[in-house]
Length: 228
Image (cartoon, rainbow, N blue to C red; front, top):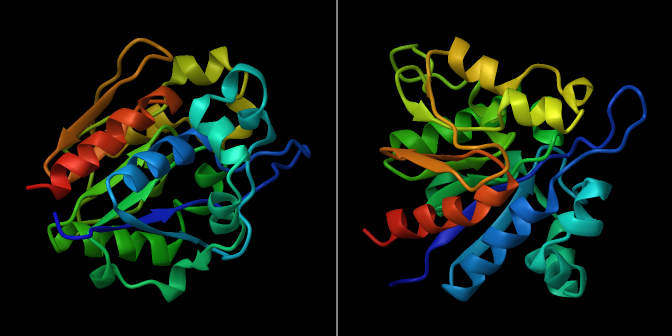
């Protein structure tokens, strides 16, 4: 397979109003990143503001620090990429074969209304390229519309972080809206598995995963789509 290129879009948002730190959930970046690396896929990491993306401090501690996270914490090359993201405005959809959004609470705040992100997703989709998002990142689909003005996710099967997972994690105050509710309100056919278990769905070019544990499934679906 010729060298494929994946654009990974991460958040620039690192702190909610009450001062609690948030950002990118590490596992949702690190697991796909190493899977892509192993397949020889080149990645570019972009964010709304460019520069260093904030990592949710909770995501690199205790049981949340999965094998891929621990590998990342000892990998200066990967860390340099996350510390020096390019700006969303500087990337062009035509230069990449797929786009992938890892989650964390950060993307809920700075991606749904980001016009550059909205246009990028539309460009990838309209060009027949995979659009993949995991956990809270499907929030970035909120305002993406098709050429005829309908919401992109209307009528499409999608997944994303569940209301019950949000409540169980006592993190409802960390989000501007509940992701599951928004996806349903936008007309999506929302599907989910058991809380905290790997679950991902694909509807044409659109690939979505439910939670951090679903990042591996999403990465595998991206690779499968790129192999066609």
